[in-house]
Image 1 (cartoon, helix red, strand yellow):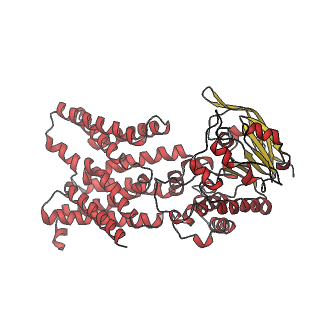
Image 2 (cartoon, rainbow over the protein chains, first blue to last red):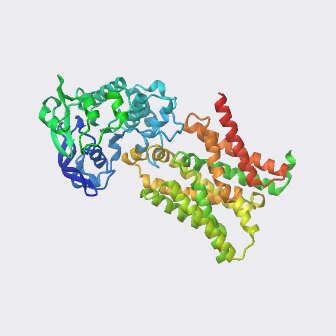
Image 3 (cartoon, each protein chain N blue to C red):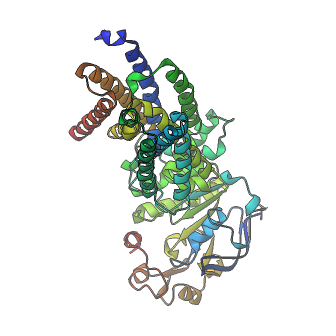
Length: 276
Length: 266
């Protein structure tokens, strides 16, 4: 049961001379639902992109499913949902079903055309995130929360074993956000999907995740959310007010937004709409 | 009305026009959402540079046009992929350079402007059977390739980063796609001419996007708009005695306008 799906050893990475990640070591077991939190600019997205192979090779080692990143070929095993996957300038008519079907592309090949198995996977993915009734709607007509479900379904159609999500609920209203995270928990619990979820805000994810990693260039904490110590979070958020919240610790989002400390990139206004 | 088909040159024009009318939106449907609408113009101008060079060196103009636009396509994609230039700036560079070179070489080759005119504005009425016999297999090859790659193309068009993360060879797909675009542009050259090529590649797709609600619908509508533009253009040119290339383009614009109005009204 305790198989490490992601193993990271002594990972360092920077854009030019600017270090973004320093000497990071972390391993994620099969079946984990890991919340990766930290301030903006703390290296969360960079870490995901390194694991996905989207950035040039860093120093240190990354192993995926037991294989070194450089020789890892089974990309379809890893699903990725990025921030704002639909860019607004691209108003191109795509139905929900067409969008979800794209998720099958990595499983197809020139010599394995579309089959009933693919149709079944697409239907199952839409069912899992409860968007079946939207299937012939244009993606553009949907709300932000529904669109995020479409992108989740797209990545589920790929039948991944590991799911990486980069602040998937940016620009989604709080209710849809809570539903989205409950859905993720269900996928993790019922389908055994390993999930790494990036968030800038511990409050929204603390109830769902089984483990928390706090990242600000270095790994400051890695363990269960309940034990994520108060002083550590204060250090992480550079002195912001931290509240005890029953299931862990909460940093007041309004303070996070209103008092960006020097060296931290302030969150964009749209990120604040849902949490403030 | 059917007397139009009594003439061999009109029958050939309809046949060649049909081939290109199917080919152009097949590429255009991916160019438009990639914000690459002007690549047709860029590659067309480069092809013109190639034609000037071919006239000067006494080579085959079509072969040279194909060679130069394929090279330019690779160059544009490289610059874009490296993030050195945005797609539209890259295209603008090749656009002006190609036209300038074409005009200079043509002058050096002491060719009359009439000959350049046919490349600039098309010569669908002078198509020969052997042109069409060459056009058909090439067009089929491009269409078949796009058909086989349609999912990967669409995925990397709509969300390049996610497509890349899921293991799709996005760089190779993009490269292959600009090559197919270059081939399409040179083939379409004979129908509407280099200066009006974008119209055939982009306008039917833009028209279809006014009404379509799915990718499949958009493609089918674009095919329909494209065929209709070519047929209306040819018939219009025949009866009004206007140049066929520009008449085809005006038909495409008319269809675009009609669909836009229909969208507003509904």
